[in-house]
Amino acid sequence: MFDRLKSALRNLRMPSAADLEERYLAESTSLVDLERRQRQLDLARIGKAPQPW
Image 1 (cartoon, rainbow, N blue to C red):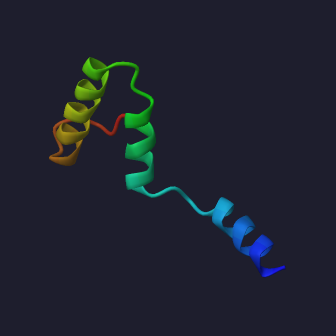
Image 2: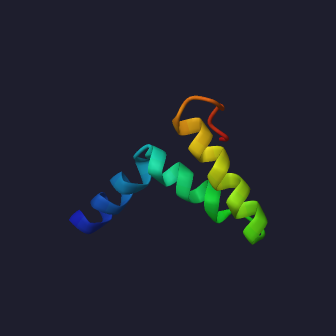
Image 3: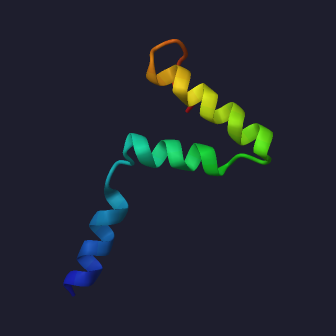
C-alpha cells in the first residue's frame, strides 16, 4: 500500500534543474548536437545565455 503511495508522490514532484538538464542532453541526436547543447548549458550557468528549456 505504501509503495503505491510513494510511487504516486514521486510522480508528482517537480523536476530539478539537474533532471531538466539531463533530459535536454539526452534529446541530442548526434555527438555534434550533444556538444552544442553542453556549451549552451555552460553559457547559461555563467549567465551569458538563457536556459534552453
